[in-house]
Amino acid sequence: MSDPVRIAVVGAGLVGRRHAMAVAATASATLACLVDPVEEARALAADFGVGAFASLDKALAAGGMDAVILATPNRLHLEGAMAVISAGLPVLVEKPLATDVAGALDLVEAAEAAGVPLATGHHRRHNPLIAAAKEMIEEGRLGIIATVHANAWFRKPDDYFHTAWRRSAGAGPVFINLIHDIDILRHLVGDIVEVQAFEANAVRGHDVEDTAVVVLRFANGALGTVNVCDAAVAPWSWELTARENSAYPATGEDAYRIGGTKGSLSLPNLTLWTHADDRGWWAPISATKVPFDADDPLVRQVEQFAAVVRDGVPPLVSGRDGLAALAVVEAVKTAAATGTPVRPRHTHT
Image (cartoon, rainbow, N blue to C red):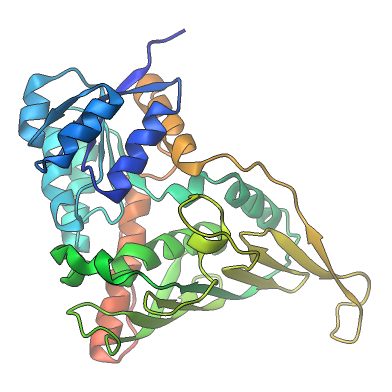
């Protein structure tokens, strides 16, 4: 059996801690060290039985790692990932890859030029239910996709915003939360070619939005809507329905609905709605709950990243995938600022 892949986790905040726990939970990888300048990082590293470094440069100079998971604040992603790529190490960057498409494109091209694997931390794609939904759509069980809706309503507590960067440009639920939904919708339905959007910060008055409503046009002709708000007490979000993280109180509601000419699919409860015979609104309609595994997607993400490092398989969510999702989000921000429809920047090779 191959030795476990040694993965350093950079960033000891909420997401970094979960990444460290995921690395510790799999036999295919082992935690090499934690990197964060805050004092709490040393105590956390001691809990995991690993060393701690105050900076990424010091950690890279010390060596002892095969790959890096970068879970720093958004504005630090580009600089940190470039440093890891320069060191020749595979890197998994938490979404978004950078705070803008130009920076993310530089990062992707640098990784490709260096021949260094670059993965994007859209962990929901590693959830078995997404694979099951993708298979159902590709089998034609929904028919022609006509319409899509994603809902992401939740209330972040006041102390969440005590951390200054979460109130500043480059944060907000569009960059932090909506980008996950965009990645999943692109994966399941196809490329997004045009967006229209409105944003508001009327609840908290921060420099970033607390609410956004987005209209999507897909390349295949489907239309979609996305409604995201981090100031509303509500059960309709991926976090409160997918049971991926026990820190969130789980509900039985759904977050996504994908409508087709043969049936509609709701997620993450993976319920398929169909008419038995005549497909018309007078005919009886039934719901089928499709079974799926409930593995932790963060652990599965680490396992897949370890295979990228050890076996040279491509990342399940590549840097190009992360770039494409960011291009849509950047278009959303531009559309909201200008009040006009925007076509996402073309990011394919």
